Length: 149
Image (cartoon, rainbow, N blue to C red; front, side, top):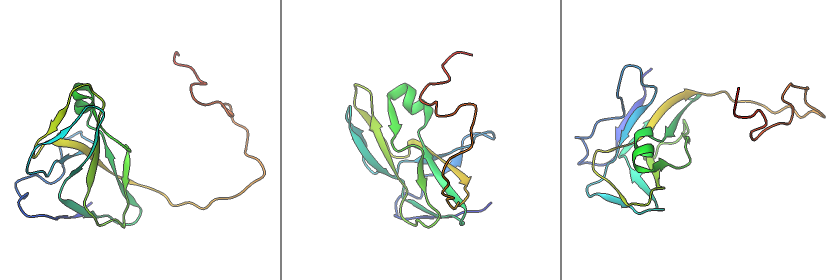
C-alpha cells in the first residue's frame, strides 16, 4: 500500500520518513523534528513536532503508540496511546510525550519518539435493542477473569 506523505517545514529533509526498524516490525518509527533539544521535566507533558503530514485512504487510520524502549528505560510515554490519525486529517503529526520518571528527559533532533501503525477499521451502525445476548463472561470486567491460569 502506498500512502502519500509530505514534509511541512524546510530544514528537516535530513530526517528519515517514518520507517520500520526491522523486517518484522509492525510499527514505523517517528522522528523528532526539533532544532533545539526539548526538555521534558519530571511529570511534564510536551507536544513534539515531526514535520510530516499524511493522506490516508478512507477505511484506514494511523495509530500512534509509545516506543517500549523509551518507556522502560526513561519513563517517557506517548499519551493518548494509541492515538488515532483519521483518514481526513491533513495536519502535522505531533506526538504528545509525558515524562513519568523522576528525572528530566531531553528529546534531541532526529530521536525516535513514537511508533506509527497503519490499521484498517470498519464503520458501523448501531442497532438499539432491549437486551443483549448472554455470554459466558457476562458483565464481569476489570480483572474479573483473574491474573493466573
